[in-house]
Length: 129
Image (cartoon, rainbow, N blue to C red; front, side):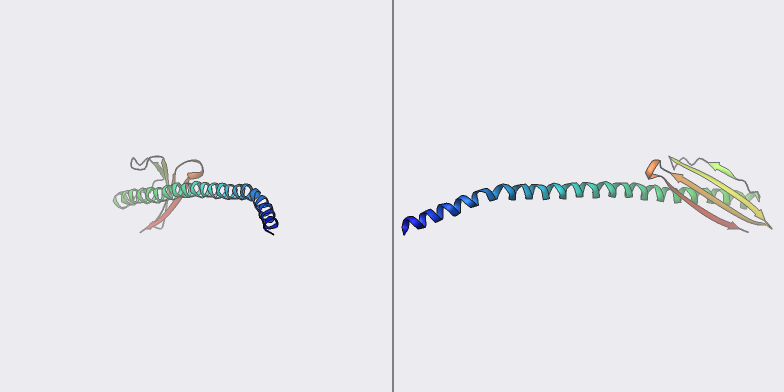
């Protein structure tokens, strides 16, 4: 009986020896997939962060150009469309358009900041009477 028990014990131990390799491969595969997913999330997060920075810069560049042109309109009563270069906003271009209908000035300022997929554009419209 003791011999029979020993043979059964050795047989079940031999069957369990091959279990570690598939388990290790499964764990390595799962960890590789998690790492790849985290890399993609980090990349998309960095892209959206750059776009949000350029979006804020474009908004403030458009607002600054609108304030500059509003000051010109209020002081000289002249409406001029122009392209402005604002030193504080590097890599941004700002254009303004203006119309005067019955002494109601409509000023539109549009700014673009960044390049490629990080490019953002914002517009502001101001009415001055």
